[in-house]
Image (cartoon, rainbow, N blue to C red; front, top):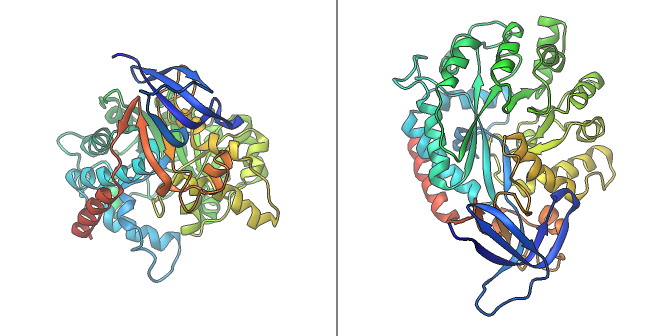
Length: 438
């Protein structure tokens, strides 16, 4: 493929953590990879200029794509995380591979339209409603991978081990679809996955309540060399049950099993002890916060500052898709800290951009994405700097984090290709498929 070049009116160049913004940036691309970045480039009459502020592609490090069907519908009547879960189980019990593919394709189109170029799909909906495997036991996983490929974004399929309804109790209801029986059977099924170049395989431990302590190590071993994600301490009730059943916190159990480390992401990490924080930091385990879901479900505010100080890198996800907007996830980390501390200025804008870009991609196994620099994948997200939300804000890193939103995304490039973004079309498809399902 011949090299192509684009001139970006204004762009965030290099490591997003340093938030370097430059004007007239010529980016040359070959085979989906950035081969040259020149700031202050002289414009030529024949060379089009991409207007706006261009940032690297965003990484949604934690998604349950079928939850998108529940947006707005679970708000009636209040309740708790546990009552919300019953509504989610009702939906999970009925989806077919075709349903899941159709829903995921529309939901991923929504993600692409707001600048997400890669998604980590925490996938536990494996088998038929009665728990029996499909003829292809990975049919449900292939359904979501195909949806991402057809949308034009990358995906890491975090195939999830789920064996128990809670600390050794047998699965029940919709959970029959989740389980492979034991960790070895789960690993054997996952080993059969064959994925296209724009997809990668990862693994997940649903939670310490859903994978018995004596099988955590087997999952960690099977995932070695790739991403391993796990729901951790999202609810106080889970911590209390874990202590009662094992005498250990969930974090300590995972550490004992060798499941923590730089390839691991602890999702939510909300209700942690000081010892938990120290373990996550010492092992350089990622902390994946999903603030819009955590506030929607009433989970609480996680200790982002303590985790950062301990050495646990931050990533971000949209989880249940109550909102799909990584700009909102970024600023929510800081704004939630302001509410908790009654002070401002905890997270620099560049650090939040890093969490949503290069850190997020790396946590999903794509170390070469999330930066506008030579050698990186050519993922570009162009923001409107003249919208009613962004006008007058300075068109810099603070604009991207504290002013812009998904509605300000004008164009998205993934692996060197400008993708079609069609929010209205995605909305119509979502309306149609959800209306049929619910």
